[in-house]
Image (cartoon, rainbow, N blue to C red; front, side, top):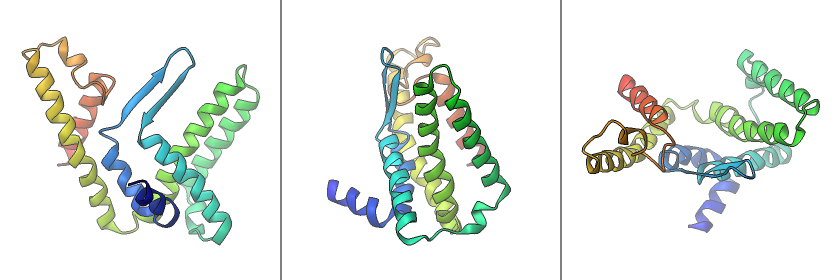
Length: 182
């Protein structure tokens, strides 16, 4: 499994990006409140790896659709990231600000920049959605089972989706979003 992941990291970033929605519903948030640290496993390490390898690949072969870089959305994102960098320099707690900036980068670069290339094929958009839904079904079944253990009590509705969603609001929002478009 590790060899397959390494192969995907170095040679098939597009396929790896399409595996993100497969792992996202099943991701578990690990938090250490004392250290101010939180990470979603396994999605964030994969996104971070894609982020690093994207830049290595860009330096190596200089291939990227330059039209994307001139698009107004890209310009707005770059402006936002630059502003975050400037405010991080003047922050009262620069370490926290730079951690936030880096975390923002490892989401924006893979999902937006690589996503613009992967989603040129319309079928990849449908595949992305179905991959997400396929594992979300597992979370839905888990949540219904846990909720049934509490006789569908209203208070239990706030925590039965744990550890996959940290609250009922995020869980309900993704269900509403998916039912809206299904």
